[in-house]
Length: 75
Image (cartoon, rainbow, N blue to C red; front, side, top):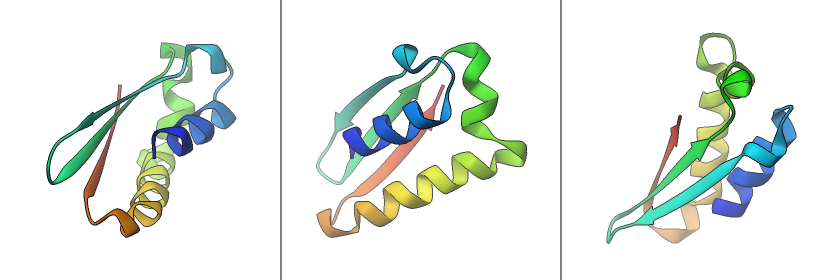
């Protein structure tokens, strides 16, 4: 999941070198924290959060085989 989120985020932003994805795992869930440059924040979130919602949907669909909840946090 971490690699997929990294790939998606780097495809969207102008500064792909500043994309950082960290992963925190627990028994029932995986938390992915996405950090991008301040100037790229709008590109990742999109108008009314549509791109962020789409990223979360893709990650959720890809993680459906793992039987654990995946949470994507963008900051």
